[in-house]
Image 1 (tube, one colour):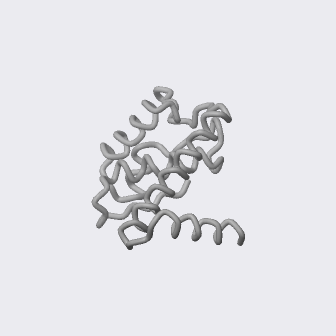
Image 2: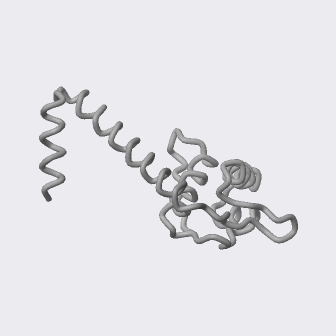
Image 3: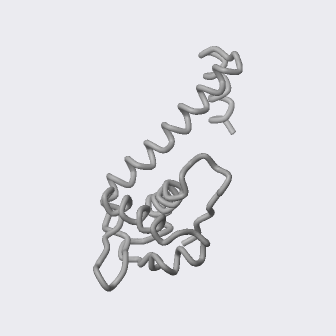
Length: 123
């Protein structure tokens, strides 16, 4: 598992952890049943508070992405392929929404945006 913490980001550290682990699970980089590092180990590696890691793991468990077995550890949950596919689709939609917002701020109209998308799709 590879997580990069950006301390200068306005996004809270626990949210950065949650999002990166979520992406790794959805993209299949972290497989069902694979164990996450212990809270203390992860906190020590990242040089952050164990409470921050615990908060991130709790959020992932709340979202159904991981399951914690008391005394054993935290493991990636079974995710059905439909849910994983929907999560990837949602992530792409969010990226498109951000790109369209940037394009409109730059003064492009809908036809300009469609033209750019067509060029990208042809590549």
